[in-house]
Image 1: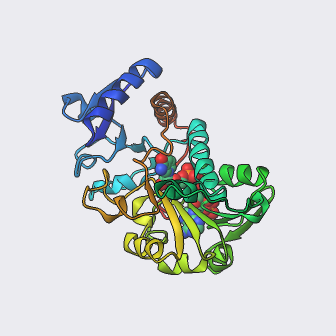
Image 2: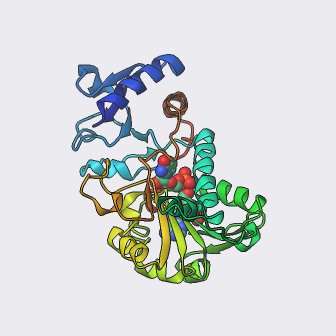
Image 3: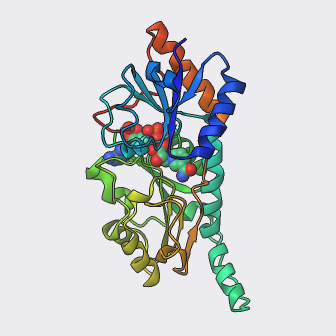
Length: 309
Ligand code: NDP
């Protein structure tokens, strides 16, 4: 079997993935870019591949993201025009659901207000709102957003979902495409972003989007940092138009120390921790696509290059 090459600017991750392949897919020989055998590789498994590294592999046939997203491949400006696949891990869905459930409860049950009150040693109860009166909108109804929308609806929330194409999900009001975006946003109490980063979705969390939500709504960004226009969010939260935001992803990670998002009251920062595919699952899914490539079978979780996800 030809070697698989691991490409990333993160040396810690490279070591973790090498161990994961050795444990969970030992049939696949794995090398790093500086190994002379790398030039034989037909598959590269990547997370932020160094610029130029993919183009330097003469026998490459498949670029595999080790994540759900593929936008990090743009780290290499000379990306060869080859098939791209991504990892879709059921445990990913579970992790993201846990994170989003926490954020929904945080705002629905006014934990944000209680925590701010504690700073002032203020004892104040707010009327309890039924879940059915709390309107949650999920942007992106793919492998993550679709499952989370259905789960929140089953928990009693008033859930809307928005995707590029039409969807049917139990107890979720669905909207499709740019023409239905305003109807989707109108009066939401909480907006959750689970879109992939593409030319069509970059900057979508902006002033106009925030204005369409209910006054005092909140925003959760689990997609990518480039979805958010940070100055618009800081202005909306600082003015009270939005009550707050939970942000997991940032244009530059780690979030630079001088970024105002760190210190704006009402904004919660988490270190891109919403959900990670397990290293074992990454190794198994990449290995399965290596097998399929060699056998000439259709690849799993292939990205549509015209859509960018
Ligand atoms: P999928 O590709 O399965 O789903 C993407 C969804 O977004 C689809 O429903 C798609 O619509 C919709 N969509 C794409 N473009 C548009 C558009 N222009 N307008 C409206 N809807 C659009 O992705 P996943 O659910 O697996 O993951 C989503 C993203 O979550 C990832 O790309 C990644 O950025 C992020 N992520 C973040 C993590 C974290 O820890 N913070 C962890 C994992 C993922 P349609 O169904 O019609 O194609």
